[in-house]
Length: 400
Image 1 (cartoon, helix red, strand yellow):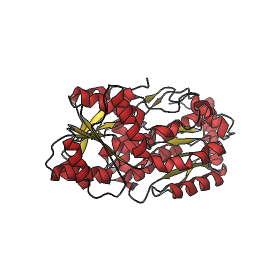
Image 2: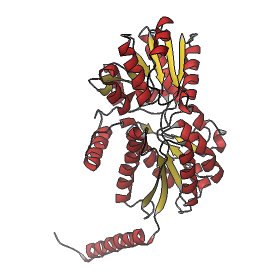
Image 3: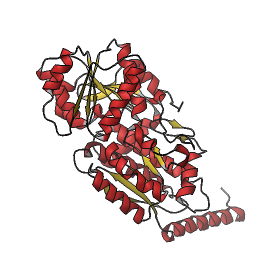
């Protein structure tokens, strides 16, 4: 091929541009993004997966130049699943000058820190915690609190609809006394009331409980034909093992926490058949999910213990980045970023869903009920509860 003077000039120009971009990336300060969650302690089984989802997305984004030549630097705080530790970590993130924060897996931990971000006018995107009150504490137009996990106000009615289709209408609710359990209980009761139903038995218990057989006997005597649990993994296992000990063969259903390793490993065969709401199941049923699962395996070389946590955090990181590109002058104030998040114009083809205008001035939740599927524990892992769910999940899901 003949190389003309024009081609030489063009190549020299491209080389100069690449050199300039590289020089800018080296000289520009990193963009600090906070990450906070339970990376040690009893909630670390999904906290670590949330962090890994953020790390995987951040690595990909930095590989192609970050934001206007600035690489993203993650400022990581371990809240240990403790509200007071979480509050201190949140205050430290604001003091360290983060542009935005991705975080929280526990509703009660998040609740204690929301004021920190709202007062500082710094956006918080919640990839895991599902308690309904988190995105309703402040009037939506004023709120700096966003979320990419399915709030319990859509999980509860989704599960209630499913169990009623299966003919189970006498519901016993087992909810812990944390902020998560409190909010979840209200959402389940509201979902039942919408169907003119009421729980036949309600059991409350503190985290760390080792035996719930007495409450399970009471639920059985009340005629319950299904147990709806709203707690985390370990306590979910206590419920399942108690049912097994009592030889009470009724189904256990709930929100996404029934997919956690602490439940699967703690309950073992007693977990079989449990069903839960899911936004993402780790099966490569479309190109995006296959790519995500493959990239995760290459980077971390281990099974994805809580796929929803990793996938939602991965998508949250990309949505944050998409909003950043709506601010072309590099002046990243919290208020400008809030507006940018509310007006993401570019469609993001994510792992959990296709996000077209995921947030708005009046809506800070990116996930709608139509994006959910029912998961089921089969042979110790989570799969689709029904074949039609698997087929539906392969289709691109968009927010209602």
